Image (cartoon, rainbow, N blue to C red; front, side, top):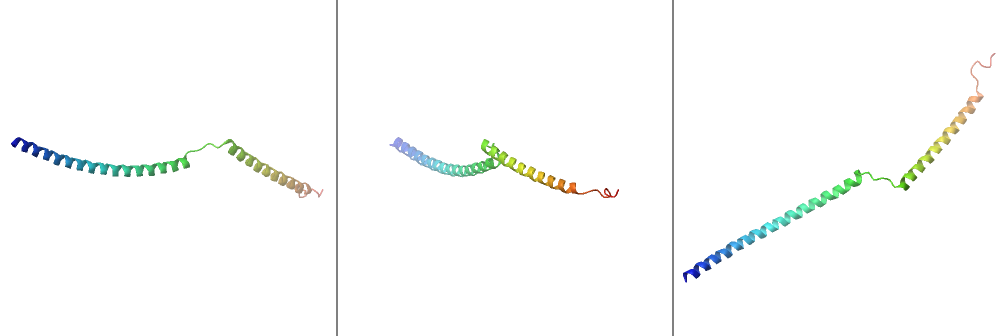
Amino acid sequence: TMQNKVEKKMKEQDIKFKGQEAADLDKQVAEAKSDLEGVENELSAVLGYLAMLEKQCIAKPESYEERSARRQAEIVGLREALKILEEETTFLQRHAYGRKLRGAGKK
C-alpha cells in the first residue's frame, strides 16, 4: 500500500539522518578527547613547573636541629676569631713595651 511505502521511505530517511548524526557525534567525541588529552598534558607540564618554582621560592623554616647546628658553628668561629685577636693584641703589646719614644732617653 501507498501508506506503507511512505512510512518505509520516512523511516529510511530517519535511519540515514540518524546515521549521519551519529557519525558527526562520533567525530565530535574524538575531537573532544584529543583536546582533553592536549589540555591534560599542558596542565601536567604547568603543575610540574609550579612544583619546581615552589621548591625554589617558598621559604621553608629551619628545623631546631639545623638552627642549633648553624649557631654552634657560628659560636665556634667567633671564639676562634676572638682567640686570634687576643693573641695579636698580646703580641703587639709586648713589642710596644720594649720600645721607647724618640728622644725619651736623651735627657
